[in-house]
Length: 120
Image (cartoon, rainbow, N blue to C red; front, side, top):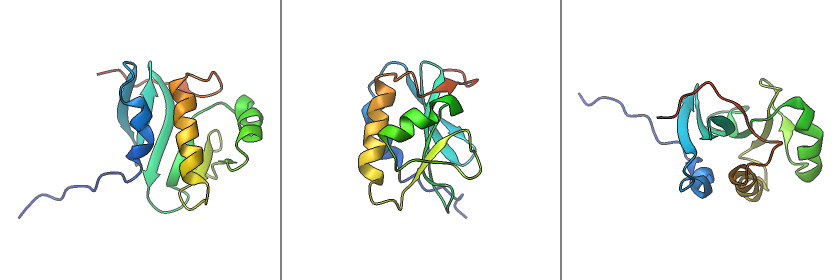
């Protein structure tokens, strides 16, 4: 009997703009794949059932209004309300996800939270 292999997260393409950044590393965070830059957690993706089917923007509540003014498609996540979320089902998901990955790459100060994950 072959061991079961978990399918690869279908949303990992969002992190492609980060992959050549020397500060980037990917780490599992519960059912998410989480993108870290310089030991800060910036974005997390999951391809499960709602509300775990999209992109989480790791930020503090003080930045929600500013980020949502720029991306009104984002909502506070219904379970992890400290972070913003866009569902993969949203018609603008792809363009917003790419923009947010580029914001993370530029180290936008509104994005990212201190991570306890250690760099490999």
